[in-house]
Image (cartoon, rainbow, N blue to C red; front, side, top):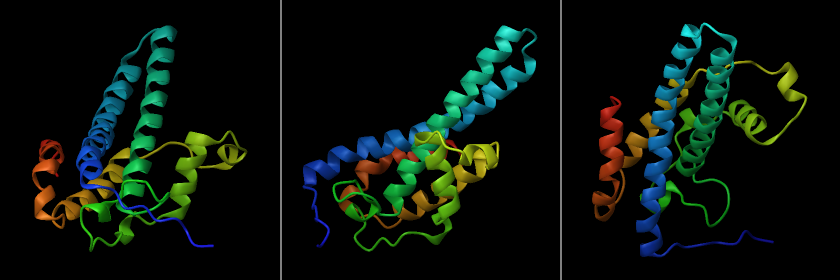
Length: 166
């Protein structure tokens, strides 16, 4: 049995760019929010503030990981037939091998979707900056290959990446 295929319409592709931008924006902003929350946690002098900033950091990490996974799947042309894929905007797009990390994928998925014993023996902590850098570097490569007709739609993505030094 073959997989179902899905071909998005031009309006679907055009409207999806705002969602791609949202994923990119949230990834970038969550990393900065995490750093700010970590600083606030270190500065907290009472237990209530420490608990609040610790919970804030955890919520931000989960958000970062969700947007990281969504962008990674977009750039890898993976998942379900009707998912938005990089090749929808760049038909020659080939997934970048720097994003291929099955162990990382499993770890992210376990953190977000499963209460499993893998968490007990797994690595603690996340190094968000290199994860962000890998996805944003590949995203920049994609922007250099998208079809000209989509360039204006991705202007917000270019601006956001530039604001973060990419």
